[in-house]
Length: 240
Image 1 (cartoon, helix red, strand yellow):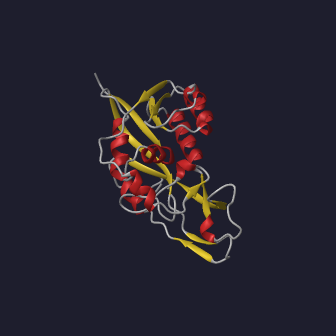
Image 2 (tube, rainbow, N blue to C red):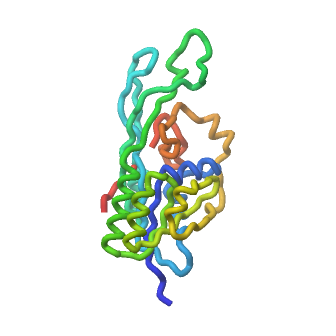
Image 3 (cartoon, helix red, strand yellow):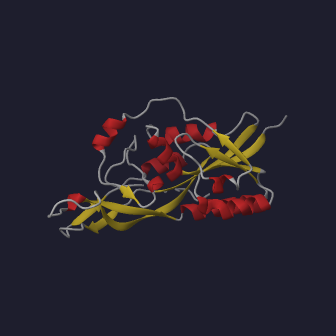
């Protein structure tokens, strides 16, 4: 019997959050392994679309001193991912949204810049996933898509895809409880497991953590080969 052709769509922020909660290193090798695990033996992956934001780059004023703080992020890992077989990367934008105190209520009479964390917000990723779902449903390029995501903002796109004959498989990840509202709009829920270790030492990672907080926690991204979260957070390279 001929294998059924499928396309995998991955919300990078969602995958990253689940991977880091489970203690895994988040890098292109891990992403590729997870993508290939989404398909069953009777399915053939013809494309993998990865949606994310590049790390924030720019200068902002610190909340107490008013001095400039510079964030220098690298998107080389996205270029690496985009060069891999079957992969296309769709890029959103990470916006700086201000500062928040590390502790609430605020303790102590005097505050310093170190008492605050930057807040970032991921923009444009859900829209790009929705547009691609609509396009594949309209063109009938494949009859089934495998979606790694859980954001209820995707529900209108999922509904449109199903109404136009596209079968939607919702990929369920470890360390995450998917909301029923989202599951109500997929045809087939499919649980997968993460690849075998190595894992990151959670205590060591916590000791290295710096002031990176995202308005949407799922959009935190790291820089470098192992993509540990450092003074920036995490977007596609080729818009094919």
